[in-house]
Image (tube, rainbow, N blue to C red; front, top):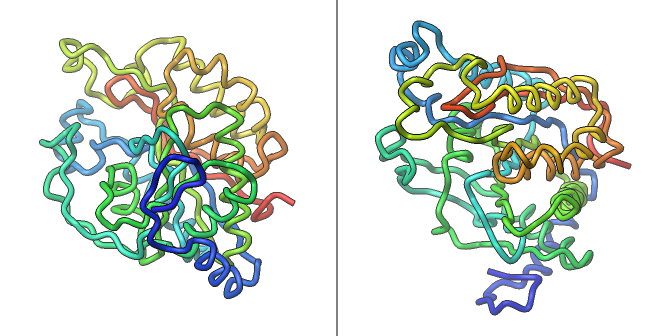
Amino acid sequence: MSSATDIPTEDTVDQGTIANQYSDKGGGDGRIVAAAICAHIPTMVLPVEVRMKMGGGRDTTLVAGLHRIREKLDRVSPDTLVIVDTHWFTTTEHVVAGASRYKGIYTSPELPRVIKDLPYDYEGAPELAALVHQVGKERGVPTTNATNGSIAREYPTLNMLRFLHQGEKVLSVGVCQTAELDDFLEFGSVIAEAIRRSGRRVAFIGAGALSHKFYPLKEIPNHLGFSAEDVISKEARAMDESIIKAWERGDHASVIDLYPEFKRFSPEAFFAHYLILAGAMGGRSWHDRGVKMSDYESSLGTGEVHVWFDLQRGLPS
C-alpha cells in the first residue's frame, strides 16, 4: 500500500513504475463514456414478493431503473466501472482499491438478515488505481492505492455489480470523511486525469443517496414503503427534489453551490459520490443534463433515485 502523506505505510510496489507502464500502454486517450448517480439500497436484493409486501403492493422502481442503466451502458461499451462507495470511509487520504482481483463472501454488518453470504469475484483495475495515485502525487492530493486483495468490500459496490457488471474491470473509490467540498472536487479531477492517461472507457457511478436520515427505530415499521411521502421530512424532500431538477437542467454549478445548505439534511457520505463525479466532469463548468432512471423514493426515510447523465463529451477540456 502506498500513500502520498507522511503517515507510515508498507510500500511493496513501485506505484510510479506501474503507473508509467500502464500510461504508456493507454496512450492518453481514456474517456468517461457514462456517468450516473445510483441508489444502492439493500431492499433491491430482496425477492420481489418481499419488496411488494414492504411497499404495500407496490415495488420499488430502483430495480427496473438499474436494468435501464445497464441497457444504456451496453450502448457505450465501457471496459471499466469506477464506483464511489459511500459505505467505505477513509480518514487521512483518498483511497482507491487497486488489487487485480477481489474474491470472497460478504455479509453486511449493517443488515446481516438482508445481505448475507454473498459471493463475489471480479477483476480490479490496478492500472487505473496506480495512475490515480500517480496523479495525486503530482498534484499534491493525498491518495493511497490499496493493493491489498483482502481489503473489505462494502455493499454499495457489490449491489452495483449485481445489477450493472458485465465483466468490466472495477475500481472502487472510498470517501474521505475529513474531506470538504473542494477536496472532493479536486479528487474527482485527479481521477479524470488518470482516466485520460489510462486509455480506458469508464462508466463513473456515484453509489449513494440524497438526503440520508432514517426514522427512529420504533417508527421504522411505519415507513417501509417506497413512496416519496415517507422521506424523513418535507424539507428534506424539497431539497432533494430541487437537486434533481438542477441535474435535469444540467445546472451542476447550482448543485455544488447549494452544498453548504444541503449538508443540513445529512446527504449520504457528505455527498461525496456526486461531488467526486462532478469534479471529474469539470465541477461548476459541467453542464450535461440528468435523466431520471427511477422514481424519487424513500428508503426508511432517506431520499433515493437513479439519475443518468447524457454526456456530450467524455472528459473536461
